[in-house]
Length: 480
Image (tube, rainbow, N blue to C red; front, side, top):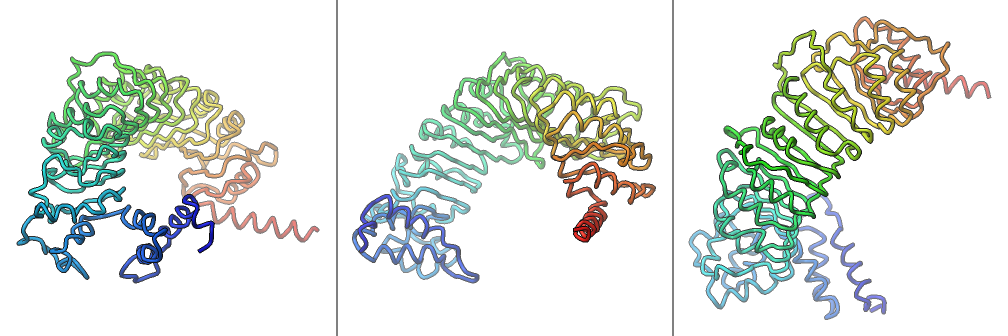
């Protein structure tokens, strides 16, 4: 054996590459696992590290149960469905066989609890996987979850929350937990145990969960490690939970950089934002089913007042209800509520209320955001666009780093001559505007070709652009 393989770091690096081997098509057993299994029998030096890699990732308890002498012939070569239904739970002697390699497991994904009844006689304080780092629990009931709440757990995904979680106290049992993702269904999202579960976690860096009460929000504001916070209400749920706004007090989320609300009650979100400060916020996202302008404006005003004017870089707001009716002459523009965010790099608005974008407003917003890279503001009702080519290029002069632009543009009334204007914006790569049957395709293509030389995606004009560029290249080649 080469002396280099006696160096632990080298050996671990080699085995890590073995674990990444991709399987050929129709392989019944992962090739990487076959290789690691073979390495365990090669020599004593290889055995321990190869076994660690072999057992590191599991998507069920079957491999551990297969270590039990009584159960091995029932599981291998292939366990039948419901094989454990009439099997007696593990005896005290068999527990040590079951736990033989449990300390090597780092990642576990659970999608069925059919075999968990075999753990019935395990002491309730048993930690089945003492070195577990990541757990994905996609099982309706959490009766056996406490067996897998390891003190080393860093990442946890739970598909439903039940009262047992409070009894088991995830945060207390998993003091090192950094990433918690909770998905609930229907009335479960309103249960008080969700708040208690969240309040037991003291070291979270990332949290995604259903709407919370004021006690949970107050606790989260005291967690200095929290960076990424997402509130998600399932769109198939019953009536969403209501934030007890009368118990809200001013809270500062000192280090939160990402804040998302997906289908959360907008009145609760506004109330929370009005009572919160996010001095480190860089990214904000809000998704709703219905988002009329009368509700969007106070949301944006609350966002502008949460101490993030000089830090926020990315904003994305959208709704998915095409039936929202807005007055056609709605005079206010929601965009002006965002002008205070001087460091904005990306703004994506896909909403059914009126944006009222015209040449003057486009120039104003572009001038306010000199670092802007992405701007998407679609009027989803496709009202008559008010931004003209002249207004577009006047704005682009103020934003040399813009790479993606999606807006409503008047492509019928062309008010610019590319031959008379030598301006070129070389950073723009994607231009998305809605076409019109009345548009002069050739004229528009020549404007983009002359003034936006690096645009590669321009909706219906892409093929015409490619043809014009190919023709230009041929002419250039012929001249040489």
